[in-house]
Length: 339
Image 1 (cartoon, rainbow, N blue to C red):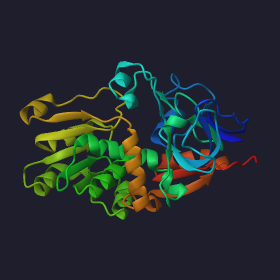
Image 2 (cartoon, rainbow, N blue to C red; image 1 turned 60 degrees about the vertical axis):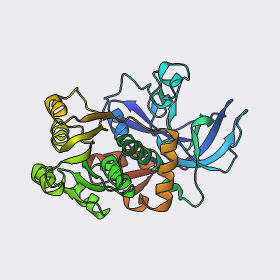
Image 3 (tube, helix red, strand yellow; image 1 turned 135 degrees about the horizontal axis):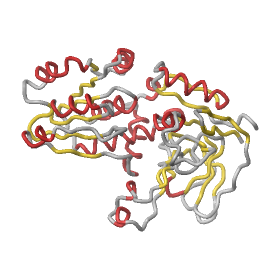
Image 4 (cartoon, rainbow, N blue to C red; image 1 turned 180 degrees about the vertical axis):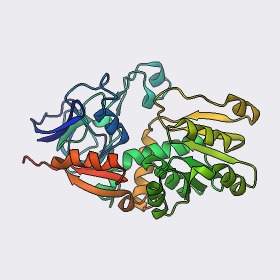
């Protein structure tokens, strides 16, 4: 059984291993594809060494087919096409008691806190397995997790059809937010400093502009009112300031990016325009289901978002290509190289 593991010191290893039989309430999935996420890059850089256990099998954006079902599992059968919402919650903390299991105080994020899906066979709790809709390709379904992030962000914003929405940051998540917001009927502009990423966004049919002219652009676009909604996806202090300055009176700022250090926030602007600050972290089951619907319909065009598919044994090269910025979304073909 092949698996891609982070072994420390910015190194990955592709290893053969033993398959584990699913236990009570678990299923084994023959993984087809796993996407490389920015979090996987952070792990590779050593930024999460205090959290992961070495060797750490990476991956949480995936699709596959159920290969074995453990005792006590109903409604899931061998051969079913599935993806996984990679959040395992405790069920007893205050967040879980309030119905917010996705932000459980003791959350196990599969692929970070426990082994992930960048392997040929993966055992996961049945309760986080999400069946695929009829007709969706496994390649497209592997984008369900990042698309669910975008769906959750747009839902948290309370975005309405016809509203203007500014997306600050045109990486994969920013572009997915823009696509989901467009599908919801919003008028969307993405700000992105990288010309390469701007071209990637424009190829998806999105309006993507250089943030250097953000003030003038927003002034003209909104006729001086400001945008009702801004999504901060850049993770940069300058991006956060641009998002806040671009908002209309009673605008909503949705913080999506994870900032490496607590950034300064212009609270005077928040006060002066009665802005609302909204946090958006991961997703809920309904977000996954909506993401799969958007992928199946083509509203989120997986074929245009996936720029390459690499075999499991080329995982290190795939990570390097993603770091160079030459790829938008890379999938690892996890079908067993050791079979």
